[in-house]
Length: 171
Image (cartoon, rainbow, N blue to C red; front, side, top):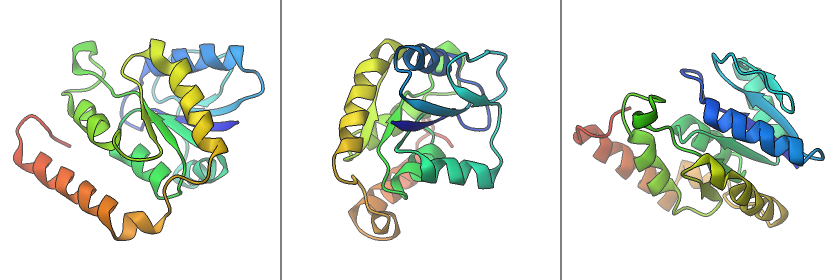
């Protein structure tokens, strides 16, 4: 299985990168390209870079069988617009991984969608990756037109609109 791991462009997410590196050590047939952000962590089993330029990021998304990342909307859109299964581990404010818990709300909402696997703790990652692999073996989970029109786009719009009005959910 070929995976893209991304933690976004703003902050590192050491617990996800560390857990993925440990998983990759136990799964040497998997190929994991990783964008690990501004991190000092040395990944021994990932093809890790701090940042991927936009064109290289798009290429990595296209080449991956599935995407693993934080629950940022950009990560979710990158997967869903390509019809790729995605696994997310939301950043948590109590761990100082983000300024608020908006990713928890995003993960709850998107976790209801086909093709989205949510894990809440890094110890759940191996089981989540098994579920992700099953999705990869199945037919594509979300077609590109679903983001251009239809119920998924309406859910996303409603979620974004409700977040704009709620002081506890910010972008």
